[in-house]
Length: 316
Image (cartoon, rainbow, N blue to C red; front, side):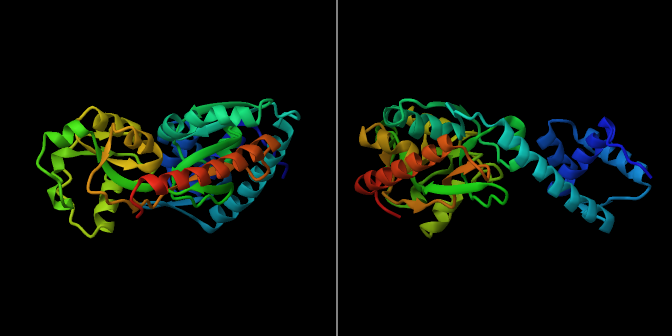
């Protein structure tokens, strides 16, 4: 029987591929920028067309049937081959301008102040930086034209190249004015829950209280009840609240070092811990020469920052 890959059939297959990779209609919908109901309906159309189920729909997850597993493997291999070919064809030969997706807080506090040095080293290269922190995979990078990215997360990129160029130290910080208004803080037990400022999205998928919970665990202390304290969706917003004297933020050394050196923020308790997350430079499997230069520059800048950090802050 002849099969023609019509537009409808291709759309059904695209939705099935996303659902199979994520094990969830909801996560597939987020990747494809359509509704969960639309993904479910497209997969149902494919199942009706094939006259066989492709998923067992359980309360917790989608479980592919044997036929669904077979189709998922074939589709992923096919889509990967297409994406790789398109990426190679789409890359400008001169690579005059590079586009870098970057975690917003890191872009504003660490990367942007160093770009002057980058352009001094590579005067002929253009570099566009835009802020976002969504997790990446190869499909999304090709679809959105993302050449490379800097992410603060746990890593584990399976279909991309990821180079860790900087680890992170976590330490509580507050303004001198805030500390002057409160009793001396001499131990973790002195930290009151209403004082704590939270980055509720330390990275895509992190728990709401990830960084404070990790810090208390690593210093061997019991955290206060988490109810109370302001929450933000960017570390820089929590840091800004600390600068305004509104509480104590869990500072990331890469973001707060200059404020500490300038006296605008003060380390509370002088206890830092190594974060579970780190900064990675992420590219597709075959990055452009421009992105290879960006990678080398970031690695070198990371080395220099580590030395500066070691001299200024208490090590974990």
